[in-house]
Amino acid sequence: MKIEALKRNNILVVKPKEKRIDASIAKDFKSELLKFVSEGNFNLIINLSEVTFIDSSGLGALVSTLKAIRDQGQIKLCGVREEVKSIFELTHLDKVFPLFHSEQEALNSFDN
Image (cartoon, one colour):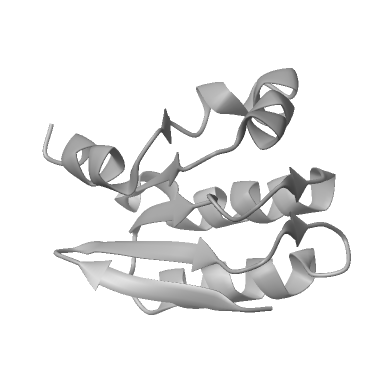
């Protein structure tokens, strides 16, 4: 699985470079996210702009990462395409993970 990660202030911006986050790569995705958390990155922005599909295993990786962070930080999502956003809405995970149009909007939301 290809992932770009860039630290901006105390926030790690993670961008999966995959079209699909499904059962075939969800385990690796979860491992990468948990590695970032274990390195002390508790505020994450996950840029899903290249992702066109996510299944329950991909959602599970995000939820597991959020549980690992607990109350030490936050996960915010940006660049979520309509087809992926509908999955978050269907599962009500859009209430758990704040969704932003752009990476900059998500970054700015940490200041508030």
